[in-house]
Length: 107
Image 1 (cartoon, rainbow, N blue to C red):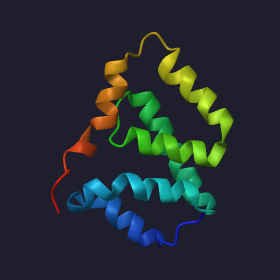
Image 2: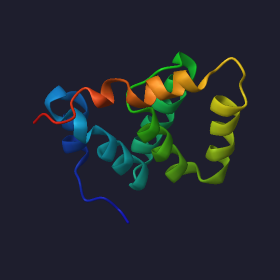
Image 3: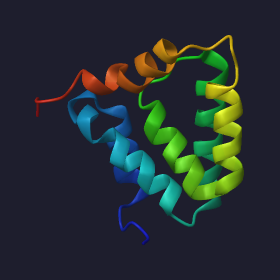
Image 4: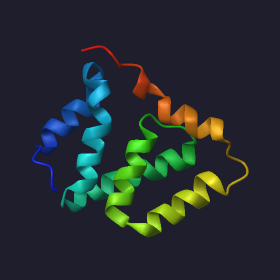
């Protein structure tokens, strides 16, 4: 499956807080597409999320990364978020909810 959403439309959704609840699916579209620039963007965002320890839409960024990289990404996520004793479940739960839950129910 390849999304048919223009990059400009995806960027608009990711920037506009009114479309906050639609950000995760648009992030996934970046991972499902064929554009190397989109893939590089997903990789950078996933890396930022891992180094900062908190990011809005963490689950969407990580899912997009798995779509791009495949099984090696799953292993890296396990090392980063499950096997690293310095990280707790609370951190990942906060990141997954983060700002992503802020716009639910609003249009």
